[in-house]
Length: 371
Ligand SMILES: [Zn+2]
Image (cartoon, rainbow, N blue to C red; front, side):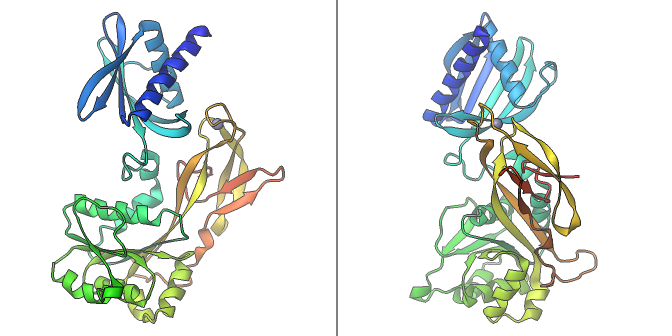
């Protein structure tokens, strides 16, 4: 027990040290006699601590356990993720092991939103709805909309989509009011409506640059709405954000801005609606029963009572929850306004005041899974 406590403290100290120094990678490796702990900064490893063998083995075992790896398996590489409170904040970490002749080597990557805003957590990148959204982003032309309230992470999703285009070698032009963050490989333009540089005026100039893809953030008026639709009809794949509750609201707003329903119907490929939901602590969550989700689907509800890893709160950060409404792909059926938010995740209050998050999008990190 004392050994274990020593290992817990040694690991905590090293992680805290890394976070305070903005070091994203911690390497732990078995050496002769002692285990080496190294930080990687600016591409170079530097030794920061040494552990005795007992502590080293104990820490590797603990990290593997927390990352939900098979602790008995030491001969094949494994990877996983965990969350731990470090320096007053719950940090998300990715962990990978490599079996070397001396024993298992461990790399811990500490995810910090301030360090790397575009590095999406693996569990989010694995979300089936997000992957489907990305497959729509590969369409040659059409309009993709990201809808949600303020603070739902729309801009982050927009940036992730444009970044992916840039990585694929697309010529991407982004018209923003204003540009909030620079995205490598994306040609970002500040829209300055007050000085006459409106979306409508920027569109022909942008199209003359021969782009594959265009981003508009965010649609707040008829100028931006018209531009998004016209660019999509002109043969670009367009992504834009707007403040809307879901696909039905998108249609109402575009109607309000005077966009012809036929043009929207011809251009709109998909609407990604999103929210941020509290993430149940992955270490103490357990199944709570089944709830009927939207669209008559049954979902499993989970609850989390709290543990020392989440400070007894049962919550650990937030997770984006997506809902995708899409045009009938094979049938060519348009995404019509009556494709309502029927499948939108519900929040169900339990009888003991506990919250059940009845999400029927099967996000692996969300608190509910589809049956
Ligand atoms: Zn917990």
